Image 1 (tube, rainbow, N blue to C red):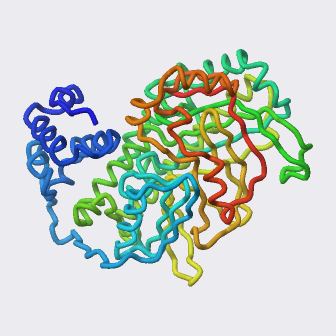
Image 2 (tube, rainbow, N blue to C red):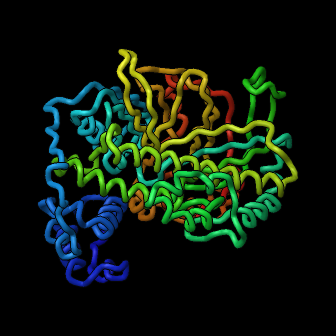
Image 3 (cartoon, rainbow, N blue to C red):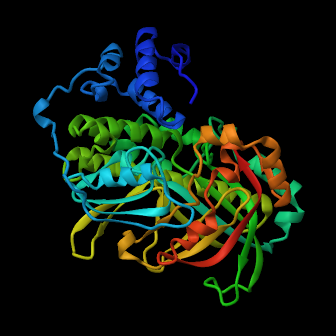
Length: 465
């Protein structure tokens, strides 16, 4: 793990004195944490110092950054975690699940609001909830249980074009992706318009209202990290669920979320939750908002808006790419993760089901579970397994952290693998190499009781940040 330096934080906008304090604490007490965890924690402290005023590690840094204790101490709750966790189920596979991911769900199930939980076979360590974690709570919504990238979406369009175009016409398809997609901090050099921008939530939610301009600029763009837009080949079997001839079809798959707007909303309401709900240090990222109170209802409206916005981004991407192809989709399949749904347990209790890096898989519900840039994805239909809270994995799941991948995977090995699979990569990096991910086929084998496979998607022209 590279040693953090004060000048690294000063470049990111930290004042000199708190930067020095933060580096000392991070390098002394948290040197074994992942780069991603340290980056997110430091960003959270800088943006929301109030939330760390009572943290035994970070109180001094928070005060230096101007953090203040909440004005209304009477409004704060100090919930006592359970001594033993509520029941939860782990869906294992040969791909394995790291112990720290299991521990995170174990800790979440000790919350007094926890009602049920499940861990998907792609699970790995995250913030608060593990990635691949599913948590049902009573009358509580956890902003970090939803995640920073609210409503992260998968969208697949299948075209009435032969699938071998993905192998044999890669230059043209790559040109379309270069012209019609942008990633990261980039925005389209054009005016964006979509009905979602007229959503009334932008009017009555002050935090969302302030983000409307940013949302309009980023509409139809994709995030960094593991987000992508890619052409590939879909294989459909005989007597498939879509009443199409068996065979190979050209398809477009996109993966991205609610962009900068969603991240800002997530951090705002995480800060609010941490102020209202003071949990022990190891559980503080699981601070919740009471859905029956104004703050919980407000977050729910903001989360719903961010999910609608993420969907609109994919509408825009697929419309532009389809127009460039001169084709309309004959099949479109969508699902999303990093979201919360209102549902009922088999015993009749009303709950909020958080799926962080997990997707809905109610009986008959369609979805797409991607692998990596050189491994297949799977079109699936949910089986409605109550033990998984009607959930399934959202992908293959990481085998290595980003830092581990960059340090152990070579550029030449990635190039060789892509060439062997006839995959053209635009952008991307070693931290997204297939070797950084679990074996998707092993993950799928671990969830045969959760979904049935209806078809396969094989990526061939991949664009990432």
